[in-house]
Image (cartoon, rainbow, N blue to C red; front, side):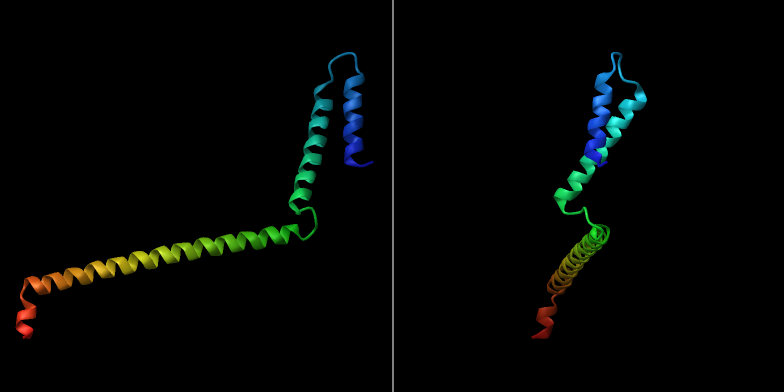
Length: 104
């Protein structure tokens, strides 16, 4: 019996009783429906095969590498910006102290 048949039987069983279905039956219906929905969603995403776990692991590694590269780029940009500002400060001090006049 596949999951769709099991779910159909549970729903039919819940609908046949004159009284309200008990909590265990409702829990079983919800569990089967969630399992079936999760399998369908994974199949639509192409992650229903055995290699999906490895694929997700590879994607996580790639995302981690991307984040590390982004951090490194920002660190390099900030480093260069600080160096440029400090160089401008040194040039400004040299001009203020009259260093270009001493070089002539």
